Length: 116
Length: 112
Image 1 (cartoon, rainbow over the protein chains, first blue to last red):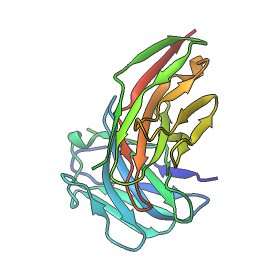
Image 2: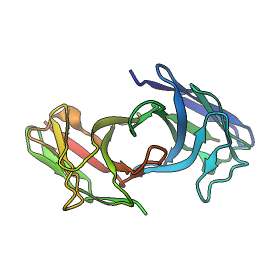
Image 3: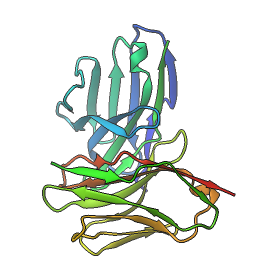
Image 4: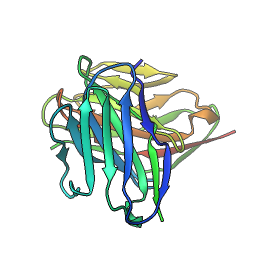
């Protein structure tokens, strides 16, 4: 149980285009989902917290107009990187917390974004 | 605020060696503590957890004990395997709606 999927697992896009990444909880309802960014050989940086049906809460320094987050249902959250640039290239990881469970988060396998 | 400090890495061990990875924390409130593992090119997997003082989390031969008096949650394994090579993150959270605070992570390499 407690499986989180991400799609796509990797994507290459051209500078100026937008990319959407999906995060799904497959066998539980996730009232809260989190989006992280990870640079090579570094820890995870929390970008935003999203609760189903409400606006995401962004961490300081994260551009909300660039990284659009939608949590439309209890099993799906999406991150859209708008007008992507090479500096947005990174590994993006989502996690989800089971609304009825303990405090642990279940992580997706990550999405490797490369902007050329 | 919350913070997690992990020992500096990387760590390289021979197969069957004993492993200790130190983790200490500061927290506002009563934290739950976690160890996550990340294999190359993958997301994070929960390795083990402890939610109150003196609890011992264990999984796949790894253990960590929640030490409130020393604010520590050190990860140990008696005999590491090559397949344990990965990045290990210590983390905490202090509430049902709280975000996870991660340590910097440490890379473990186990050679045959």
